[in-house]
Image (cartoon, rainbow, N blue to C red):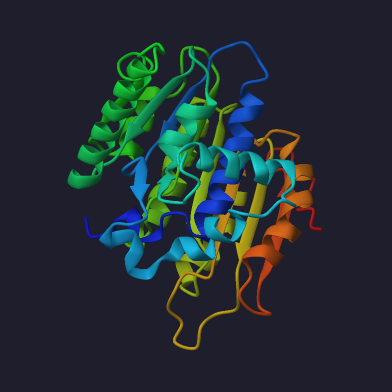
Length: 305
């Protein structure tokens, strides 16, 4: 159950898609003064050292952030993402990669709240230590050290179950990120059931789900199941860097499914996905898909490019 370590995949093409979209979601939330809550159900370690044994074993970041690192022709949404990663690497050399918790902490505001969960005994411990280091760094820079405590809470617990106690948030504004490893095929059902319950408790929240695009049946059926959830709008984006490998192994594509997305996100993704596909693609099988739709009224089917 606890064999998965995100460090093996830190900074790869799937992280690029997930984190570019996460920054756009948070930036949109920042446009209103009312504070919001960010919930990360599978937070991981928060920061990854790309020189360590886990990340360097397959060096998956070379298929992702490395391909964008020195480019000067990035569209604004992608440039914002690369700029944030570069801020963690002041030497100019790519050595550290921020996970979703650190990206959220950097983009969200002082009054916003971050709730982080992970059941993995090692990941949760490292996550807490990484935030302690961030707090110490801010103190050394003369900045306010309100990283931990009321603003940010970290728990080694089941993020699926924790979401039931957090929705609806006091401010009635929230972004929930759900990205389990899916090593256990039951995760697909757990995500769907968790979202169904969360939408009943807080139907106006924004929910962002990452998933791997695989040949297995559960992965192929997953987007269709999410489209049937009772939300106002949804957006579904996938990015594949190539066609399936001959042996069928290896992650070549991933998807982000957003329930109640901001109205600006579709246009942003239509602008950046073609370029990301070209920059990250490894063969002629590289492609992207983008579709949006509504499930409440039942009279609007998906809209494709």
